[in-house]
Amino acid sequence: MSARRQRTQEWSSSADAVVVDSLSYTYPSPSGRGRAARPALDQASLTVRAGSITGLVGVNGAGKSTVFKALMGIVEPEGGRLSILGQPPQVARRAGLVGYVPQAEEIDDTFPLTVRDVVSMGRYGRLGTTRRLGRTDRAAVDAALAQVQLTELADRQIGRLSGGQRRRVFVARSLCQEAQVLLLDEPFAGVDRRSEALVVGVLRDLVARGGAVLVSTHDLVALPALADHVVLVHHTVLAAGPPGDVLTAENLARAFGGEETR
Ligand SMILES: Nc1ncnc2c1ncn2[C@@H]1O[C@H](COP(=O)(O)OP(=O)(O)OP(=O)(O)O)[C@@H](O)[C@H]1O
Image (cartoon, rainbow, N blue to C red; front, side, top):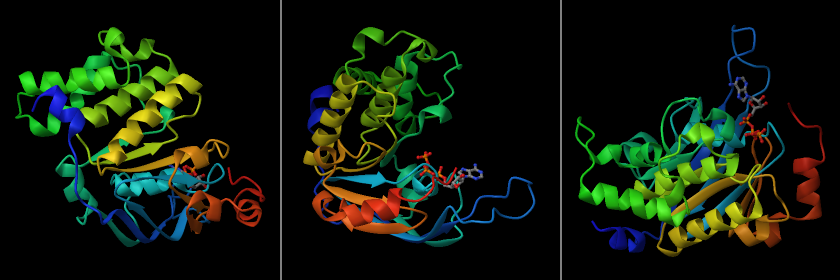
């Protein structure tokens, strides 16, 4: 597939792209014995529609990252049902249908990889064991780098990038994977407005083609412009729907009024 076609790929699905139904998870206790006193998530349910950006919002420790980790198989849910594009998450992940941009602190930037190396990983699911990129793969990598405006930094080691540039590298990795569903955990934390606008433009382009995006953020001010739907989380889902319906004073007091939980 050419770089040109990659940019214009469309998906026709109109169903719920991601379903999280009654998800519960409690981390191991800090002592290493048993489970923590409080579940990170207790019966949390939400959906992400194809063709839309859904914002996941809540205080530090509300359980947002845990939603992503359950969808990515990093934690094993204790209860509930998850599906991505109508399939069990592990099947969708294996098929390369899901791109994940983890929180900044989970990215190991000491690894001696260049920007191009990391973005190329988005193609690995399509390659044989040699992991040798063909012409189509290289074109997809170039197109993704151009989309996040990192072409000029392609040969730089990721440890020598700013936080915002590093986030864009991981967005590009998901783009060249041609993932239909993007999961982004706080992609805008510590990112300047220009980088943020660039990434939002890329996300808008993806959902305009029928993709689906779940993105966690702390930025309530930017949220109505970013998200078509909002899910307010505090260890469970407090409210979900269009920003105007969800971001009410009452809901925000319930989600943000209490103590931070870590
Ligand atoms: N690896 C871990 N071990 C033990 N407890 C954890 C671990 N990761 C998260 N927790 C706890 O689980 C709860 C939910 O955490 P989670 O990281 O999902 O929240 P979050 O909403 O993503 O927070 P933030 O906005 O700070 O990223 C918190 O109480 C947190 O302390």
